[in-house]
Image 1 (cartoon, helix red, strand yellow):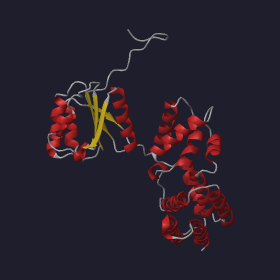
Image 2: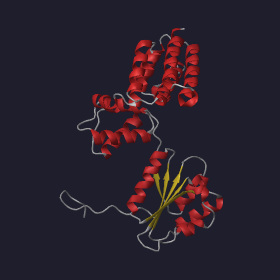
Image 3: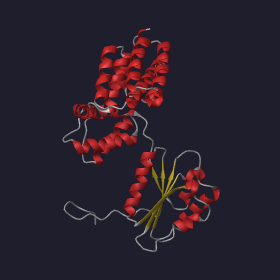
Image 4: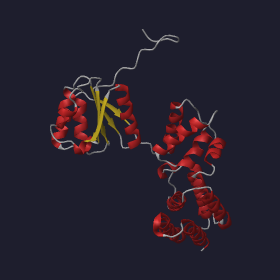
Length: 321
């Protein structure tokens, strides 16, 4: 009988004895594997890379726990398993042990594709974690993260969060979790801006934007304010590096669409505005300046702040020149 409002829902079914989690995005694969292990509710949990397994070792790993309570095992990157170990995994999938939940992860490429097919034929369940590359996919990812936290963000808030944090899914998930915990109401552009004001990602990009726009005084003022409020020089240098890469990418893109460049349309418009006054030679010189500065900021220079001031002055000169 289906559950109805006000009635107790049936508990979720236990995970399959053997599940293969497939995908190249490490964060999504790790999360899916962890959710399966959590659903198994096993008392004994183990994890190891497939490349470290030796033939015959799987039998010992999957032997029932002497203390009861079930066992959950995660074997990572089965595409790297030796041939005999792959055979052990396939054989086990055909006759899994009771009270044992085995989770295998696979990067999803051509390597080890035959193992994937054989595991499926042996009865293993499969969970796919598609890569998140396009701008729209990243927005959908953020919406999903806020739903997990019982919150909602409007489109302007989602775009602002992407601009502030970047495209790394692990960092985006952490940002969503933190925003959900520290704020109330619908998450908007204004809320994201307030939350990230003075933080490394937002401030670093502000410094970079002013430098690439040729606004030397504003860029130096933003840099000094950022350093005074504790922003890491390494992250400011990283923002400069991302900015010069964006100049080069958009400058050489021709008529390619934003999704092909991995950048949202509004960001491409901003970079195109910044490109006014830049030549390919100037971009190349700025790239060399930032590469040198990055090394100085990471330990080769005496003062990271001084290195960044020199870099910003040189970047503006590259644009003007």
